[in-house]
Image 1 (cartoon, one colour):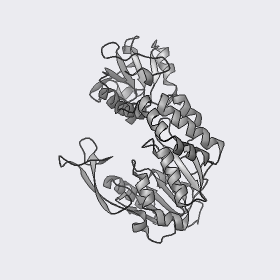
Image 2 (spheres, one colour; image 1 turned 45 degrees about the vertical axis):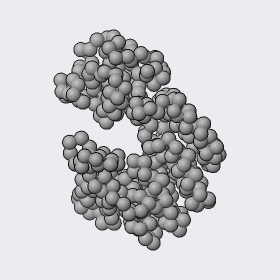
Image 3 (cartoon, helix red, strand yellow; image 1 turned 180 degrees about the vertical axis):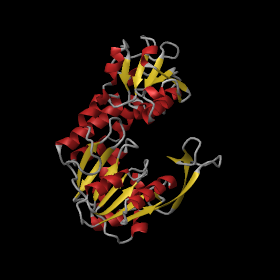
Length: 360
């Protein structure tokens, strides 16, 4: 069932046939565990490079010492290949290992296997080609091809061949930034901190941070207060194409939103107000917009249509949440402002953080 997902060693991961463990107890390890659980593949234990975690549990499985497990175990590495964790495994005598993309596996577990992706590609062949032909440079074209192929093949070598560390700015597409900056999906202020750190002294700016999670907004406020940063407006809301109240899934047992919208049939969701950038920002002068908002990017772009057309800000839009966004987002941007130049860069070791850039 999982043969196509593990192409390097063609590992057979049938229930009960192999003792399987996951190396990594971060978000990637958790997502890998959830995906394989959906596929009825039993994970027996976790491994981690932090010795302080040995003996504790993660996802209700024991975190074991590397030297205590069977040499015949299959280890799935949920971590960046640049860390070369496989060398530690082989040094311990473990030969059956594979780097895995947790996001690929998660989509695979929900039915997006190679056949399904191939069907989507075939149906959208003309749109895919149109988006490819509008890309401005070879790096963008290589990135676009690699991302599309990875969704078919689960080959992390493709991802690593186009990986670019600096997301949104400080890269070869967009260097330094200032002026009016709109951050949709501001999280706890990670992009804000990078933005502040790269500003030259005295350069004017106005930062608009949009974040659906209230606790994350509190973190941003705390950071601004502690560092005497005044030119930041924080909006605890979801970005969309109209005013709307959303209900988000809760993350585990706390009240934080998990990013996915639910129908709230059991009354356990978190209500978040949504609105468009055009409604909120009005005639504000905007120089750059970034978006990473869990698949709502197309709605948000439509809701910023007036701002984009009037200001032609630099755009850095996440295009990885839905495979069809890889071509729908650049095509929509070009429809709004035909003069935009379109680029693609990829900023994560796995399927996450593929960004469509548009600059005038």
